[in-house]
Length: 92
Image (cartoon, rainbow, N blue to C red):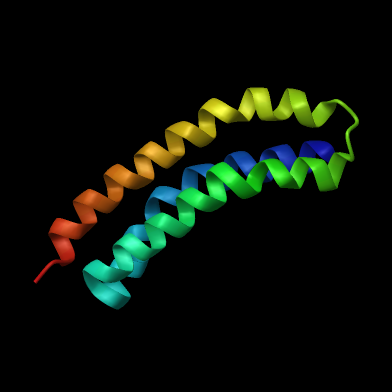
């Protein structure tokens, strides 16, 4: 179960920079920034909670957060950069 959770979180982290483009196409520039805020909150605040629920303080969660932390931070920065680019594309 733990390895499935790790793989899922890595794959999801690389998908987050696409979210501003998807929401921007639908709702324009306002959707870009709302989706970016939501994505960054999920990346940096809610993913670590999954380890507490899934692992219940077994120690593997701490190791996984240490390993995945830089990936989440990089994904959050890429999401914000992607949002800035999408904002210029969808701003009218």
